[in-house]
Length: 176
Image (cartoon, rainbow, N blue to C red; front, side):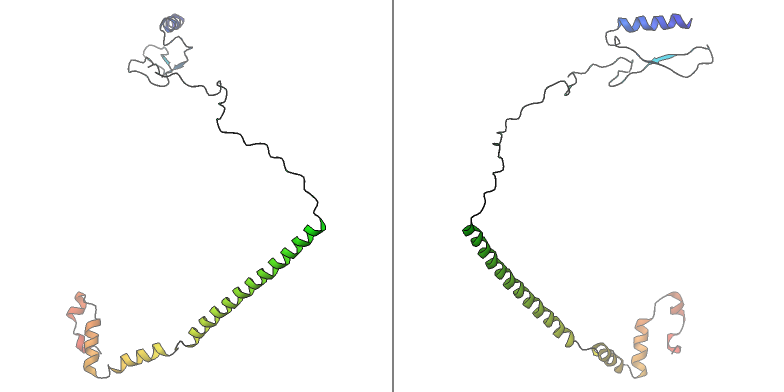
């Protein structure tokens, strides 16, 4: 019985154009009512609700089969490294003089940078020396000197109290 169903499925697959490819079949869940396996064809890609495959409009491009395209960019001429010429004594002497001039110039630039850096450091140190370490202490002392009488202390305490329900019920003037 199962063999007959398999033959029928194979014949229907050959008749259908879209299903002419080799069909892979998988078992679905075992049906205990009729003790038979139900075969379902695997379908990949775009599939209609009835299970038929929708053909693609454009065939897939196989880049592997096509030869690589030649670029239209002009090729650079082959540049081989030229063999090094031996320098003459005059050329060597000229290069040495130029190197000495460059060394003097670099040394002068270096000394200028160091002078500028030292001057910047001296300016920063002079700013630090002019900083008054007792400034904050004096300002705090001035602020407290105004609060010597009891009335001014009570006013400041009034402003600093947190206004929760407990503080509103308590008498703040009795606290010292």
